[in-house]
Image (cartoon, rainbow, N blue to C red; front, side, top):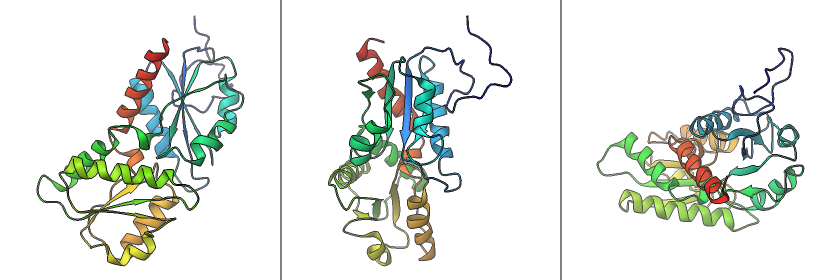
Length: 257
C-alpha cells in the first residue's frame, strides 16, 4: 500500500510530481545540459519528461540538468543508491558531457548505470525534423535548408552527429539543397549569416531552448530580416517524447525488468 504524502513534506523535482516517495518502480532519469538562469530555458525539458512519463507509467520518470534546476546531485540524492536507474542523456552527441561530465555527476546512484543513446544518435530523429518541416511548409518544393548546430572546438563528435543528422534529414526530404553551420567551429554561423537566404528553412540542431538556440541563432536571424521557417530546437520537437519512450521501453525489456 502506498503511503500518503505529508502536507508539509517537500516534493522531489521529477516529472511525475504525484509519485509516492516509497515508489520503487525503475527510474528513467532524463538529464539535460540546462541553461542556468536563462528564463524558462529548462521548462521545455521538464515538460518533455512529463510527456515521456505519461507514455511509460511503469517507470518513475525524473528530470535533472547539469546547469540550473532541477540539479543533478539533488535528484540523485532523492533517488538514492538502491533504485534501478536508466539514464537518458538529452544531448545531441556523445561528446564530453555524455562521456565524461555526466558519469561523474551521477555518483551516488547504483553502479553501473544503464545509459540510453543520446537523442542526437537515436534513429528516427531526422524523420521527426522532416515531418515538422513538411508540416510547416507543405508538400511542394523546399527552399534551401540550413542546419545550425553548436559544434565543438575541442572534439569531433558533435560535428559528426550534426553531419549525420543532416544527411538523414536530406534523404528523408528527398534531397533538397542543404548546408551545415556551427557556432563554435567552421563554417561559423556568424560568418555565414549574411549569406543565408531570407526564405531559407533553418533547422536548429539544439537540445533545448537555451541561449544558444534563442539568442545566438533565432534572434540573429530576425535581426538580419530572415523571413523563412525557423524550427523549434530539435530536442523539443513534437514526436521526441515518443521516440525516447520507445527507446527506454526497449532498454527495459532487454534488461528483463
